[in-house]
Image (cartoon, rainbow, N blue to C red; front, side, top):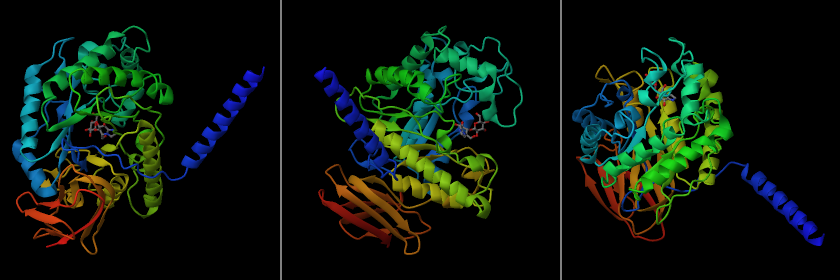
Amino acid sequence: MKLVRLIAGAFVVVVVAAGGVTAATRGTPEPARRYVTDDLGRALTLHGFNTASSAKSTPDALPKLAEEDVEREYRDMGTNFVRFLIQWRAVEPSPGTYDTKYLDKVAERIAWYRDRGYHVMLDMHQDLWGSGITPAGTAGNGAPLWATFTDDLPVATEQATWELFYLEPGTIRAFDHFWNTTGDHPELMDRYAKAWRAVAERFKDDPTVIGYDLMNEPWGGSVQGAAFETGPLATLYRKSISEIRSVDSESWIFLEPQAVGVNWGLPSALPYFDDPRTGPDRIAFAPHLYPLPLDLGDDYTAGSKAWIDRTLGWWRDSILRTADRMRAPVLLGEFGLDMTRPGAADLVGKVQAIADEMGAGLAYWSRDESPWGPYDKGQPTPLVAAYDRPYPRAVGGVPRRVTFDAKTTTLRVDFDANETGDTEIYLPAASFPRGGKASIGQATWDAKRRILTVKTKTYGLIELSVTPA
Ligand code: IDC
């Protein structure tokens, strides 16, 4: 009897204490200062593009991109990162057969980035499951035909916006089979995880490949929200992590939440995932950001600005809470809008400031030639100026705070130094025409790459200011 009461009492204490902790953490969460790191262990600010949406529909699943395009991007914006789209249909054209020629062509493109000091994340992209959801193949992309089972349920041929195809019965059924909600196709998730192993096997020794984004914008079909994220999605992630780690213990693994809702700032329920590698976990959280007012047609201007800013605040807080639970650094894997819209450049600046404050990397959607991208019909859009900004692309320590004051042209990087290596700062020509000078340490300026390398002491707090030379 006594023991029962003791256990019951302990239970009450634990529940009350946990409630108190939850209440205490409902305030504005602080960034946890977790970073994706390079092979030296330096904290990275990943700054780049999704490249490219065109890979969804080309027969060879490669983006429309030439080496000169990478060169131009670096020259114009000093990016150091690419979320490179790959497709399951091309990796595994028939069950258990992996297309090594496709992976070779991907490797050829990765080399263009390597030569310019980039980090490449491979993104297994899908939208609306795959092209097999409609007979004409015009709606979805990603999954191979052999993995597409709609049970002949209907999918409309036209929709007002592409996202609405997610609600078509045939699309939902294709996902329900993949997640094995139907119980008819338990093999599909295993195939997917093994396809990732084939990709990891190919790229595990390539230091340019920083990691793998396991699935673009997972959609749960008839299972949604927390039930999906802690259920079948977590199962797929565990299977894929285990397959990847069986061949590659070094690369980072990037996990996305359910896109619907979380893209707008609602909380994700993704749990912590154990990383079976030796050494610290290398699992990152890679959500997207598409503020709902923009989706609904508003601009970042007087009438809607306050509302959009509020949704950005919810997004920041929700993402930091989930990242804390996952004990993972954050990469904002997609954010973008039509740059011809009023206020677009301001919004890009605002999102970059939020990402910096969170210590998160950012991949803009997308690198395609279009009014959303940096170039349209060969000409720069307002995105080029908005996205070309000074930033510490690698820090020899753990950043505390990174801010740029445009009025005084001062980039401030505060970090707790460690012995991982030198700090590298990209400085745009517009604000730093002759490069930069550092307030402490020894600085070397590489005018061609526009990189200021700063060697500081390797312990203690470093408060580094960079101003124009
Ligand atoms: C969009 C492309 C568009 C294409 C559509 C469907 O810009 O041309 O028709 O995909 O394939 C996402 C997706 C990303 C979307 C992007 C913009 O991950 O694939 O690209 N977006 O709509 N989620 C929210 C927005």
